[in-house]
Image (cartoon, rainbow, N blue to C red; front, side, top):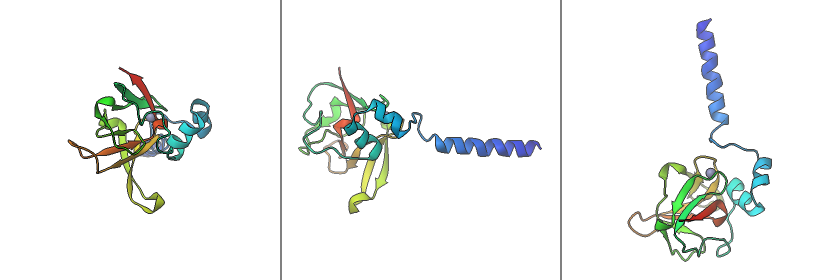
Length: 150
Ligand SMILES: [Zn+2]
């Protein structure tokens, strides 16, 4: 009997771990209440804002960039650079554990998607054509970020 209860506990916790993949977990309806349509489309539906239209591609102020959905620290102006792409670009994450990566095969190409590990928000993609010292280009959507001046 003890064994069966133990097994049940294991199964139940495995299921709850699966359904709560992220610390912050909301339904689409809940996200839509706190995000603008553009922010919702980018972060929850893996959309991409049009180049040169976002709030931060040309932002040169010193400060930190946080997840627009959950407020986790993602990037710093210290690693932001001019990529001339029309999207805010960084050569390093401010806190690597908050910025996850996974393979994205949509649009007929293999890219590396970048997401917030706290809430699952889609942020953009990371490419290998960035500047030194990392050689990385985190190509982000302004709509996924919330900038706070230092
Ligand atoms: Zn987040």
